[in-house]
Length: 370
Image (cartoon, rainbow, N blue to C red; front, top):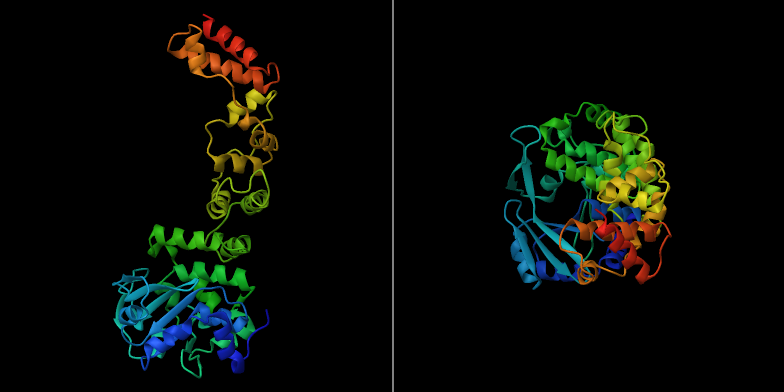
């Protein structure tokens, strides 16, 4: 979609989010603003469905007026409501202060939307659109110009020190939009200390990046910036994983985001050799059985093409008989039952038997073997 002009912002807002008229009506004279990524994407002509609103006042009270189901988060003075097909986040305008690098911020109510926008990560996310009869763009940090220039720029020199996950976010936005970094931002980013933030927060941000359509480009950028160095060959392994997950039999086997991260994290010294092709289907089933789906996917990405047959065919082969049939034929409870059923399954996999009677005969022979 084409970028939206300032003159058409009101129309674009109405077309993308008609349910916001209910918010404007409920707010009355209370200032309410569409903020952050929602404004950025609206200007790009690519509304994604995320609706973040800031209220210069009581967000929870406004949420209550909307008559919708509300989930409040007191620490950050936010509320969540569902309007039509969209989930809407309402937040009370706030300022943030970081006691130490990487800590969660201490927050206080803000007196204006400008104060709230000043706490954000990049200029392209520090714009707001007033939900008034005549919507107006509020852009105190030059976000629209940076959007047009295709660059990411932080609002202040301490941005990455306050919240190092913003450096990981930079890779996500740069990959998604094809943006570059302004020189000052790049210098700050390359010196970011990710160790000051908890591993849980780092992991959450990396999973968001890995969930992007252009995730591989984002991971490549983190490597190039020196923030998340990758061992040689890991990015190519992740690319093969991504390709495999697009089509059967691997599509849907595991979630894409954690699979991509697992691919780039395989440690040096781990075997890079694919699982050797089995001589018989039964041998392949024994090699694959008990392994996690993610391990099988990584092995396939390393070249174990026979695993396609395992997923398509071999793992679906089942016996018509079960343990009750062997017990009825006189086999006592115990290891003999498992030995018999395993032997019958192996022979069926290898094409040596195919009827129920043959399964039973093979299982009984193996079960009775001393």
